[in-house]
Amino acid sequence: MSQSHSSSTVLPVGSVHDYEGADHDLLAGRFGPEAVVFDGESAARLSAARVLEFRERLNGLVGEFFSPEAAEWTSPVKYGFRWILMPVDTAPPEDSRVVR
Image (cartoon, rainbow, N blue to C red):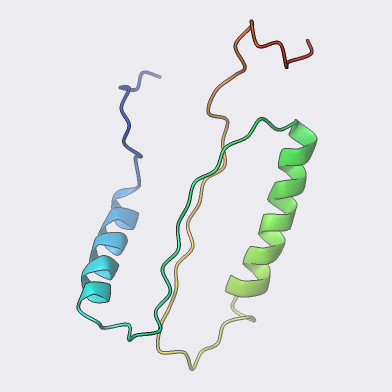
């Protein structure tokens, strides 16, 4: 699988359209003055066990806040949460912090 190297993040087309439309609506004030926008990116070297723990805890939070049972159906604003967790590199062989 060959991919070009760039500093851009590749998103599914549907997500891009959602984000572009939401950004336009946000700037136009459609979501009201209390709209919350939050994003971020983090990376760390983690063991498989820690990644599995993170996945389980994140799935718990997603279920707690975004499941149909947790939805606040009277809210005028629908929020979307999209994310991806995947390996992004390996430690270089000369990294003295790595125990092999």
